[in-house]
Length: 198
View 1 (cartoon, rainbow, N blue to C red):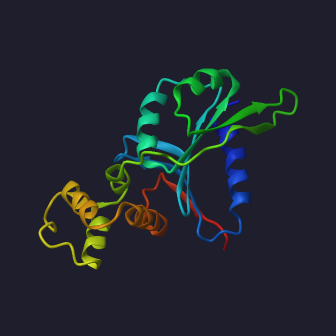
View 2: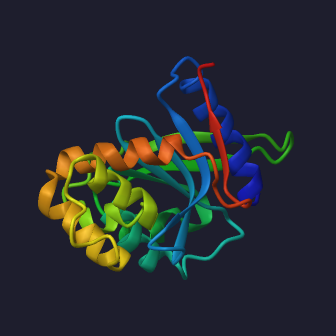
């Protein structure tokens, strides 16, 4: 059982769950922290729910860094893990992360996912990490629309991010970021995106 075996089943479940929801987008390999890491699947609607897959063929070597990055950005995270790594992974991840166990039937080859722990809301989202999901021109466009771009138009994207945080409340800013991600039309070629519900 490898990553792709699990991903196919997980994607089908998420497609079925959000089939009639035009406000939901599912993105594969969403880049975080300017490409430092990519989360396997991200479901974006009224929150960002990330899914990280660790098959029995994977290792947990990158998990500590992934935990730190995903926990700074995602509203919820679910680890989808094979039994080989489940025990060690559970000791590493935060209590608010959900866990789904992946098991492959040795005869049929069918992968079945079962809930071991439901995800909960992230208690400590880092707003600067969330805002950094925006491209520079997107962040500046938001400031232009609310009349707060003066003095930062020629500044770095970091300066623009900080201005956004100064002038927009965190909850509103998180909603704006989600909406911008869902409305993008020119993702990098290696990022697959699909809208559902029409």
